Image (cartoon, rainbow, N blue to C red; front, side, top):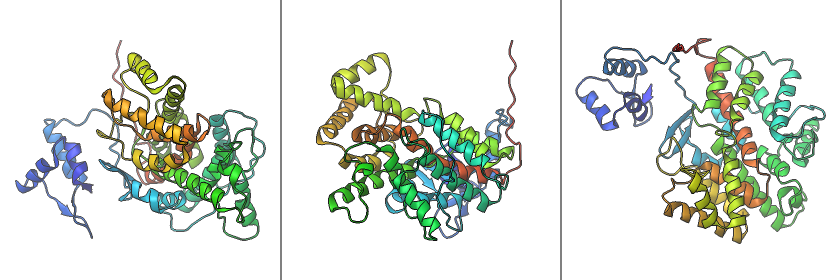
Length: 414
């Protein structure tokens, strides 16, 4: 069943036109169980769309992908019917992942012992960790939901812990606490957000890795840790899924061949590697570095003289501001120095004065990374860890569809 907004989008009409079809008896609407919205049968909508095309079926050759994972609305993504911007303020990333997966039982978010990573580049280390997770999992071919959830948790924990600079596969203090708790039969308490805060701020003065001294720490450092963790937790939630992004489609294609979760997630990582997808926040980070060095007016004028837009501004889906920007920026803002905060606000003002589209989530991720001294690729790292949750949800959903359904036809040319 499709909500009215999605039905109207598929028909290429306004919602008011859709309801005009209903009033004229051309379409039937159905009340949402327990809700107030009207729903429409996918088959009815597709038949009407075909009539609008003069009886011609769509020529794409691609499967029509229906999903109950994420819906994109003007106010942002909704996960299983709940707004991500709201979830980012009330739940942990782990809780949102379980929501996306429909997980019935909680599990442990601890990485297996993968040994020493021989690679230096963060993106390569993450791919290495994913390969090693699959290679050390004797149940990797088990596609039942509980097994998929267990595998996803160990992957997310592993890719988080392998991120830290010059650490190889050594565990962060927070991840070590999680492993120790498990060995003692206790619940693993350190969150993925806290562990990510440790590895991304290793060596930074004033960051969680520097300021956490345990339960006896004074209020100042403890408060700062809470701010870092809240910002990263929100970022993980807001980036967890965005409907059928290119990397998500890649994961679903792999799932349609009944590849195991590890191989399907590798397809997602490969697609995410493009500079126009997972690494988009790095371009925004470089803009912020240039602005700090050369001044906002000069840097922005220089970029706009060579390009139509600024990195971190505008979005293909959202015609106005990306709804994920504001909540993430508001959490990042207290972590910035007054000077950097003022500079960032100057960038926003100058962009608006020059007719640049409104800022998106990539700029917010860049502000969090640049403003706190994290590495230039920190935004990409956060995005990758977060999207593992969404990919897993789409992976298990695709397992319920007929296999091998993605088979487009080429138009041969000479």
